[in-house]
Image (cartoon, rainbow, N blue to C red):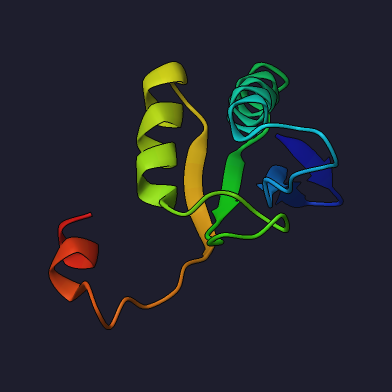
Length: 97
């Protein structure tokens, strides 16, 4: 953890999981997992994920599932959601996740 004066600074990564031209969803998932693993190795404190559906602006439609995959590959880094939509049509599923 870095210091800023007398305060501890925490560092995090933020992953939109956008799809550049020509990239596949599989490539984006593999690269994002690798980036998060590297962030942990470098001493980052947290990884932030977002939720997007059917958009090149973000391919992570189930951040809880992605977070579980990430948790299986890391040991220390915190995992959080920077944005997740409320599911009015699937409240029981959202509550279970």
